[in-house]
Length: 177
Image (cartoon, rainbow, N blue to C red; front, side):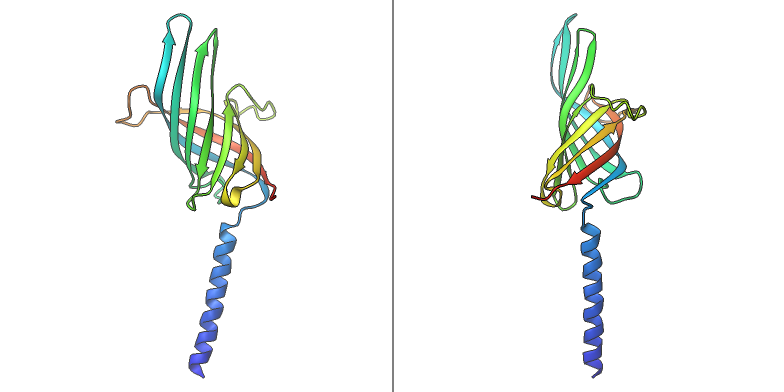
């Protein structure tokens, strides 16, 4: 009888723990949050025509940190490809990023430093547009105005590298198809 009672109790504990673990990995279907990505940008190649213009292909890598302590957009690995253009008195960076979580699921976005959300004046560096995702993020879309905070470049990085913290104010929705 004791063995049977212990088995029933143990089964109940297992079910409760399994349910809470599943709930912890659930992604809200919509929401808003703030997070920062700690990026180091590395130059990949460049074209420099003195007095005319310069373009640099960049790769950026860094971890994310949710500023509200929430799980969405927290502890992901961001990898971006970008192009920095400086010509005719204009300077901008455009590109795309993949944020990968611990399960290997990805959120994909494009960004444009000329696209500013005037309703968020502190987010004065550009906007990410979330265009889709994989796994639990399939069907995600959204907008992420962002700021750029220059940081010291870590020792040992290749010449031309630079570090930037990029805080985002994110709103998203997931439409399952």
